[in-house]
Structure formats: C-alpha cells, structure tokens
Amino acid sequence: MLWSITIGRVAGTAVRIHITFILFLVWIGASALRHDGGDAALRNVLFIVLLFACVLLHEFGHILTARRFGINTPEVTLLPIGGVASLERIPDKPGQELAVALAGPAVNIVIAVALILVAGAVIPEEMQKIDDPRICLVARLAGANLFLAIFNLIPAFPMDGGRVLHAVLSMKMGPQRATSVAARIGQGFAFVLGFAGLFGNPMLLFIAIFVYVAAAGEAQDSALRSAVTGLRVMDAMETRVASVPVEASLGDAVDVLLATAQHQFPVIDGHRKPVGLLVREDLIAALGAHPREAPIADVMRAPTPVVRVRQDLGEALNVLGAGGSTALCVVDETGALAGMLTRENMAEMMMIKSVQPDWTFKQRR
Image (cartoon, rainbow, N blue to C red; front, side, top):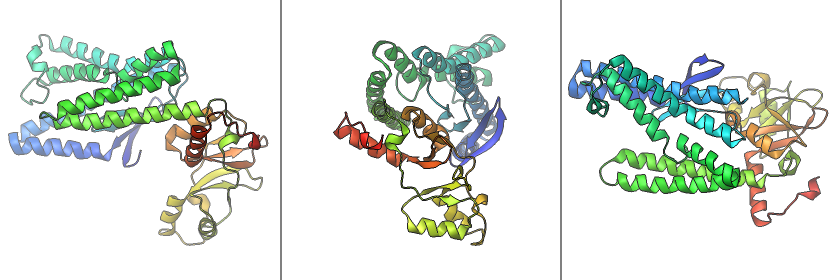
C-alpha cells in the first residue's frame, strides 16, 4: 500500500503503518494537549497505540487462521480506520472462510476478557467511556475491544461480519450468488448508517461511504469471477506485447515507451524468459535520478509473477490481485514470454461477456 512504512516482520508477514496513522496520532495528541493538558495527551496517545496493538492482534487472528488453510499474508497495514491484512486469496471452502472471518473478533473478545480479569472489578459505565482520558486505561481498552468485536460482526463488507454472512450464504447458494446477496445487504447497511449519521454523527457518514464502496467492490469482484469461470489465461491475455531486453539502457526503454501505448513492459533474457517488469511510472522517475545509459536492471521490478497460457483464469486473477500487481507476464510451456495479462484485459473481457455471456473465445484457442 502506498505511503506505508514497514516497521518489522511477524511470522513472515510484513507489518506496515500508513503515514495517515502517524498523522492521526499527532492530531489526537495535539487535540488533547490543547483541551486537557500534557498528561491527557500522553494518556490518549498511549491508549491509541495500545488499541492499535489490539487491532494488529485482531488481524493476526485472521492471518494465522488463514495460514492453517495454506493461505499466506504478505503484509498487514495499520490505518486510522483499522487494519488491513492482505491475504493472498479468500478461502475457497465456506467453512474455512467462516473460521478466518471469526478469528479476528474472537481475538478481541479474548483480550477484553483478559483485561477485565486483570483489572478485577470493572464498572460497565467506565467501559463505555473509551474517549475519556480520566477513565482507567485497562477499562477503556476492554471496552474498546468489545466494541471492535461487535462492530466487526456487522454483516456488511468489508467487516468480518460480511465475510461471516458470505460464508453462511455460500453453504446454501454457492459463492458467486452469495457474494451478490451479501454485497446488497452490505450496501443496505451503509444506507442505514448514513441515515443515522445525518443526525449528528459525521463518523457514521464516513463509515457508511466506506462500507458502500467496499460492498460495491465485492459485487464487482463477484461479477468478474463469474465471468472468468471456465476460461484460461490465453482467452484474455494480450499477445501483441513490446518487451525490453534485460541488457537495455534507460534510453532504450524510453524509445520503446514512446513507440507503444503500453504502461508495463516485460523484461526478458536471451531466451525470452521474463526476468522482471518495467513500469512506466518507475521509468519516468528513474530518468530524473539516473543517466540515459543506466541499465534498466536497476529500475525493473523483479522477480515478476508469471502465469501460463493454459492456466485457469480464476487462478491468474488471484495472482493479479496479490500485492497490488497491475500486470502479469504470461509464458508458454518452455517458459518463454507469450503475452501479458492486465487489468485492462480483464475489463475488456468482462464487457464482451456482458454482451454475449456464452462467448467462448474459440478464435484464440
């Protein structure tokens, strides 16, 4: 994720903090300092840091559970609105998806119970005043974790409750239909939250917009996965692709860039096997810091993910979505470059399938 800083790795997953989270901490501290003094500012900042440590544990509940089902998570990012664990894919089996979705809220409930036991007698009214720096820190954290567990179980994407709903519906009607229904329910909740936010709570409006956009994204992803069912990479890939040899210079790459409409260029070795990917934005940025004669090997993104021409298109879609990739190199049986698969290709294929759902791309088989 852009504007994120890696602060370490835990169990093979990179832990990143988005720059807006740091700005959020500064704003929290400055606001408390202006209204309640230095002690309140320190208590509020400490509370937010500990709260987001709990959010991180919540995300690792998802991560470690997913890992039991063979799903890795390259990174997790902390944002002011919570954490985002970048799972390589959503579990295929509804039971596994249900377990992964429930693992996060379960962690928050365990933390809340542990904090209540540590604190001894916790007054329920104190747990509700999580924004009051005068309240016991342990009680505030216990209340916040209970809130996180309940809030995340709202049956709307992208909250865990949306995944729980999707898993339950998948057991009855299949994953594609379940995603469509769950997305509509999520958008309905977004309208309810937005309406409630009109009566004095701007944060609900912000959450409503976030939920609505996420639900719409899930619906679009469901439509895409439905469209690629039964197709192979060769049905959607771009075959007229300009590539750049690995020994080329930045100047050579610029010449190729100006001669084509591509934004990504496979970098190939002498056997036409992809060894990297040169992205237009990286190339333009490099021109300001390197001479024209500099090798592109210093600029290309490597290693680059590859898929095979006859590979299932749904599997390739998972690879394309992992790590925010915008393009994949497609190779033939010998490992040589055969084409590229981009998000633009996928969008064009969806347009074709929307007009003619039974289109089989026989001319490319």
